[in-house]
Amino acid sequence: MAQIINGKETSKKIREQIRLETEKMQKETGIRPGLAVILVGDDPASAIYVRNKKKACDEVGFLSKEFVLPATAKEEDLLALIDQLNADPEIHGILVQLPVPKHMDAKKVIARIDPKKDVDAFSFENVGRIVTGDFDFVPCTPAGIMELLAEYRISPEGKRAVVIGRSNIVGKPMALLLLHQNATVTVCHSRTENLAEICREADILVAAVGKAKFVTEDMVKEGAVVIDVGMNRDENGLCGDVDFAAVEKKASYITPVPGGVGPMTITLLMKNTLTSAQKAGKGE
Ligand code: GUN
Image (cartoon, rainbow, N blue to C red):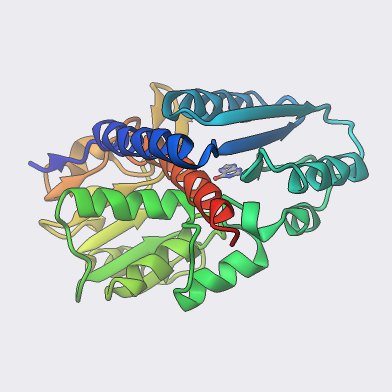
C-alpha cells in the first residue's frame, strides 16, 4: 500500500515559511510583495483558481490586485492593463489566467508581461532560463511536484522518470526539472507507441494527461512513485489522471486528487512572487 503524499500539509508548511519571510522583508525594507491576477471572461473554473490565488495572498501577507475583464474585451485593453501593471512598483508578479478568449493571442499576451514580473514563468525568456537551468522563477506546478518529492525524501538522482503529457505549462518544464536533478527522463504523449510498456519502466511516473483514470494499475511498476497532476470531473466528482484505488496498492508513494499537486501550484506562485519582490528590493 502506497504512502500518500500530502500536498495540503506540505503546502501549509511552505506558506508559513513564505509568510515569515514576507513579514521579515516588510519590516526590514518596507517592501510588501504584490501579485496582480487578471481574468478575462467568466469561465467558472478559472474564477475559482483566481479566488484561491487571492486567498493564498491574504494568507502569506501579500498585496493582491484582481482584474476581471469581460469575455468581449479587446486584446489591446488587456495589453494596456499589462503595461500599467508592468510599471506599477507595488506589483511584483502579474498572472493572466489562461486560457484567454479565442480572439486573443495568448503568446502575444504573455510576451507583453515584463519577464521580471512573469511569476508563471511562461515567457520565452523565463522558459529559456528553465531550459538552461539559470532560473529564478520556477514553473509552478512542476516545481510544486519537486517540492513534494523533496519533502518525502524521494531523490530523482539516477532514477527513470516518465512524464505523460507534453504541455508547455506542465509536461515540458516537468521533464526539465527532473533532468536538472539527474533523472533519466522520457516524455510520453498522445502519439507515443507502447505507452504502457514505457510507463512500467518508471521509478517516478508523472501523469499530466487530462483524462480521468488514464493511468491504470498495469502501467505502473511495483514500488513506483506516482504523481497525479490531473483535475478531471467524472460521475463521482473531481478525479485525477490515475486510477487511484488500484494504483495505490502497487505504488510506494502516490499523490491524491484533490490534496496532492493542486495546493502546491499556488504555493509556488507565492514563492515566485516573493522572489520577484526580493529581487526588486535589491534593484535587480
Ligand atoms: N491556467 C491553468 N493553469 C494555469 C497556470 O498555472 N497559470 C495561468 N496563468 N493560467 C493557468
